[in-house]
Amino acid sequence: MLPQEIIRRKRDGMPLDDGEIAFFVRGIAEGSISKAQIGAFAMAVYLRGMSEGETIALTQQMAHSGGILDWRDLGRPGPVLDKHSTGGVGDKVSLILAPMVAACGGFVPMISGRGLGHTGGTLDKLAAIPGYRIDPDPILFRRVVREVGCAIIGQTGDLAPADRRLYAIRDVTATVESIPLITASILSKKLAAGLEALVMDVKCGSGAFASSLDDALELARSIVSIGTGSGLKMTALVSDMNQPLGLSAGHALEVAEALAFLGGERRDPLLGEVTLALVGEMLALGGLARDAVDGRSKGAAVLADGRAREIFARMVAALGGPTDFADRPHAYLARAPIVWSCPAPRAGFIAHMDTRAIGLTIIRLGGGRRLASDAIDHAVGLDEIRGLGEEIARGEPLALVHAGDESAAKEAIAGLQKAIEIEDKRPPAAPAIRERIVAAETR
Image (tube, rainbow, N blue to C red):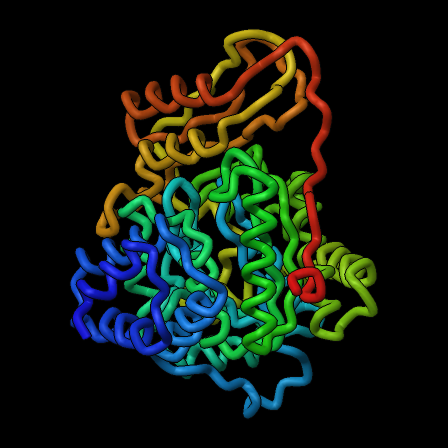
């Protein structure tokens, strides 16, 4: 077979058979297919789509392009669970959720990714912690999951290597939003991680890849259907992304907020609502709670008594981070040299946010990638971000801008003022969780 012929067939809207997909995925993993060909294939899929059968084949082939983790020999008393988000601005839920579920008796081997497009990646946030090993060897990864209960890492060289290469190229070729590619990317990593159950957080709104509810539901149903067909217990929640999730956006700032949330010092209500909803679903799917409501209560309990914070601290230390990180995060996290207030240009109520534009503002500050090879400045970003519906006086801060220099700070302030609309009337409140999709609804 020739890669260019497979690309041509998909470009022209023709279905690919299992053999063609297997050949192309194998070539991605082995490096025999070039970056240009991978980018062309991704664009063809983005424009022409894939059938459910093609998406299942792509998912399975990418999952099996490397090793498959097996947790049965760990002697663990609880289920192997995970959660995945389609990506948003300020989304630090994984940092909070993984230790919460572990504190409730689950085991969470979370394989996370770097930022895509305008969204921040969990892996990039953890890279802000000095010494934290985002790429441990399999022996260390398994030991931390067994002894601590959770470990958040990146893809190892042997875990879904085809997806790892495709993932990076999607980020810089404007093909991130393809539902078949999103579905296959997410599920290939999760299948390779040897999970028993997975809860999806499908973001919807101005800061999500799925800007409309219909698009988000289509993606949620695709992932639940294909995941269930691959042997995973699955539920998906569609959550709101019409504003940054939490009070901060930017890697070191989000790590600090996640730790403050776990410790009870600073808890944004919207972030808490989304996190507890996902924890409840995970514990219910894993048999650790009677239902999602009971699971939510159990999650709230391990937040209140400090067990989740303790597990986060143990995970960081076990993966090479500072042993006292949870007690002194600001001694280790990078700080930007410039911190300026972004003043509200008028009084009123925050009525609308172009959350995607806010994410792009962070990239321009240096907190994201324009090219796959770009380095990230972990210190930059936004903090104390005001939320939708809040009343604000003229000149009050819409957010604090953390920047590397004055020029970048001025540009970010101008971008933020343009991205946030203030009106005379308070907008109606939107629910944090828009929809819930279970396997039966996808058939």
